[in-house]
Amino acid sequence: MKISVKVPATAANLGPGFDCLGVALPIFNTITIEETVLPGTGIEINAIKDETNIEDVILDHTPMDENSLIYKAVELLYNSIGQSPSELKITVQTQIPITRGLGSSASVIVGGLLAANELLGHPADEQALLSLAAELEGHPDNTTPAITGGMVISSQEDDGSVVYSKLDWPSEWNITVCVPDFELSTDISRSVLPKDVPLEDAVFNLKRFGMFVQAVNTRDINLMKRALQDKLHQPYRMKLVPGLERIIDNLKHEEDVFGCVLSGSGPTIIVISLKSAVEKIKSTVKETWKDMNVKVNIMTLPVEQDGAQVLSND
Ligand code: HSE
Image (cartoon, rainbow, N blue to C red; front, side):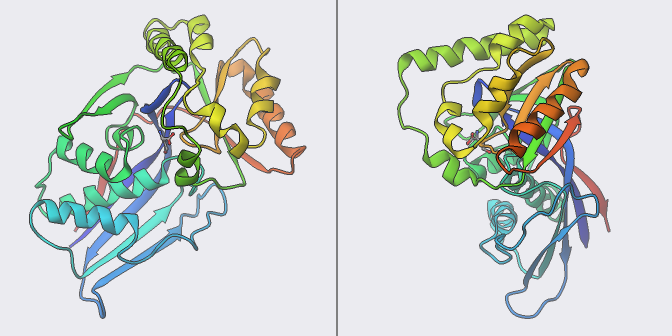
């Protein structure tokens, strides 16, 4: 039996929603799991670049054995029903750039879980998949939208369950995704965060998060301009993302730009705006990073409403 699943990229945090807000985007990894007889350990994992890959994804440092994240996801699903995987060929066709803050790890976790679930005859329901994925990733803000699609607020509760709610993002609010040519791993980017934050910074984010949700629900641009700020992670990560501060500064007086935020743990930057500002955003981001010898790939993308999907099953 051979199963292929397609999983979208995701951008998390989006300003004030550290570890709880994320959105699915139409860039995809395709994960194929095939039951087959193989020599050695019985497990073979390959990663290949999709021809529509948006850049030269570096695959060298992706573990291709039982240490890989995708294998861990497959194993977790098997273990959840008291089994162990064997004789599997796993192929990851990648469009989502690695270590750029676009949810590539969440995509392989979700893809591995979903494909294994299909192979095993659906022992896990959506809730179980959400919990297992968040458990493996450590936070639910990428894994939840990768499963559900859309823009989603999510929380993994003390009992492991994941509670989520979708926001109805206005289609005329453009999401411009600026992917620089340097990498930043989530582990490094989380290592600079403090264990405790000042109370006033926590309150600052509480207010902004409330504003974000209300701005989306009422289509209030002025409120969204205030909402797209953060004091819980971005200030600490500025030094790891050269150019972020300058890009925020260079765009802050543009009338139709709502704000610039880090995508997940970076280094990708997301700019939210009206369509009228998109060309200006592209030229400003390109110029600012060019001055620092950074090349950038820029895409304006809609919210991907569909989550991970099984493509074929034979
Ligand atoms: N919320 C996570 C972080 C996303 O900011 O570290 C990482 O993918």
